[in-house]
Length: 286
Image 1 (cartoon, rainbow, N blue to C red):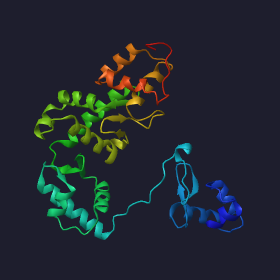
Image 2 (tube, one colour):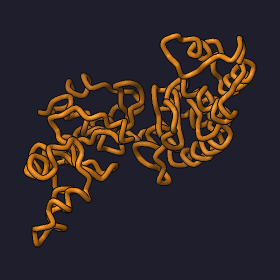
Image 3 (cartoon, rainbow, N blue to C red):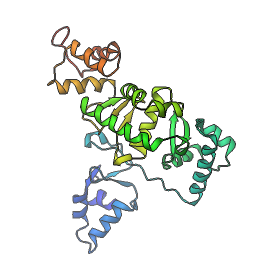
């Protein structure tokens, strides 16, 4: 792979698949070799990014945002040893019931000869394990009526996405769940916003219930798909501005944020940030 960059492609940072194929044109099995380079991760010093369908030099810092792509990571595979750890882990969490258990507790009571980083990757690969709180885990099967409640959460999120242009948050989801899923929450002792948010994140991001891949950020925001605005508090107001043709008033902001169950002053404060040029003032309130 190296000769493609150093000799033929003049050491480009990014080399598209078409350019790579041209470099391999003299080879009888160019298509097969390109397939191997893309899928088998055999090249040395270069990695393939499927989103932009191109290769990049691993030793250089690439601005992947410029290409609207994320830097890929090598996929973590559950080998025989890790599958054994996964089995131990699930057995232990099942024994704990609805009591959230952190990594330290797992190490104390389960014989696991892997690093904490590997353990977290095993947890990420295990659909039956839910991160109930930051760094605390429960087993899916300890939750009463989760499958029945998943359908209600799904319909709730779709309704809220339609109402707020593909966006919702933990405040709105929790308010709806307290009405529509009160028995489910009571049976499982889910009393706060984060418990409902974490269950939804698990179902619609990790488990991909109904083939969903909703995006959850900052333990607060929820998006139907990746938006073309920041996935943070400032982005909430950018979303509103985009719906209003780019110009928003303070009154519109306050009304919108109240509908989203936000404190208006907290988010509107972001507009006044002199280090951020996202918004410009036409006058005092516009």
